[in-house]
Picture 1 (cartoon, rainbow, N blue to C red):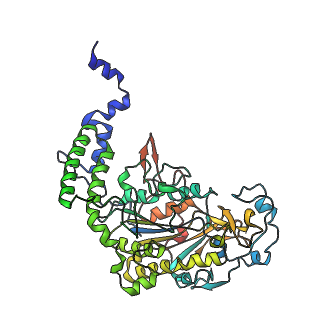
Picture 2: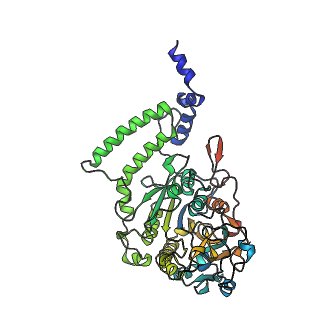
Picture 3: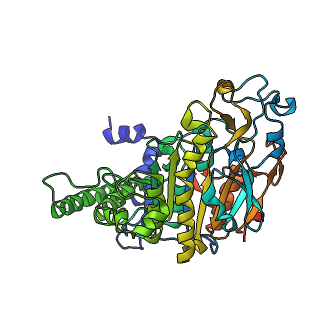
Length: 482
């Protein structure tokens, strides 16, 4: 019996390729990730800045995600005919054979209880729930014709931000960081900020990396308490000891990288080093008490609190320090009418009072500093709300709407976007799109285009297939491009 021969027989083809030293597929991938010079040593910086496919209009993104589905018919999409027909049965052609999350039978139409007025040169309709948006009408592009394939929160959020309704795909911010790298080696390229105390329904997969190296995942920071969990040194360990510890770990990881050639080893080294640098860089950038009182007042921010207003101000500070993609998640936009906070009358007014002011302040500050010229701002949710009352709460004193994937509104501003325009339109009741449909994959393709990417070529090979954010779909929405 030959033990060596038996070992070779026991190896699968994949194991052989993984163990084939410097010529293994893993080593080839690792070398590409680390940027090995021929015959030189590893330059371990997978987040080094990289060039996109063509000259970008935007170099960075602030994505403001309102988790739950904002009621578009009570904010942007004014429907006087719906108000006129309030309380009538919904027309059969719009509800027959359709599945809704919490409504069955024939629901009653519901016009918005809010007053609408027109703003900006385009005469953009906005409700009295969003008074601070009135002043930015000439700076935003309002898309009223978005639609998605999913009508429940988690699948719809995953569809919007990863391109698939199921867990396991890289998030939009991870794709962007994978493609562009980071402009600041002391901060993550992709930062996530969460407000209202609840994680989004789609979970951490909304800023995860799926199958691409995890160094490109979003790093969740906090505006209250430790900015990043588990980054500070424990009692008894000073910075010199931490540095020696990391040096030892780096040596071990580099030895493993040479032996096995696994790309995640490079990720591990890079993440340890980034965490060490973040110990000094993050507390400074996350300290909004350094801002003038006038700026805090403009956002409605309060240092030390975990609020959406604080996070908008932090987004500006992070952008100024070279962070590539800043993702804000704000919970509490699921307006079913189940309680006073989730109803579209006073509940929506109170919710917007905490959110429209900091969004408007962020846009104005970026515009004043010149950063808006090459920064893309996105505001929206995972789907819209129905033109009828939600079934469970139809007899309630609270007004609510069900989930609605067929038509909803979002807005964009900044790098490469036509300001002050309205794109797309829905029918007189808000049930269907009648002009310029924009699917979530088209939306993703357009964002990547603004960042300088051909969305069909920003790919990562996994399990024998080239994957991309837009899957096998997506067309650029040229009508909104400057």
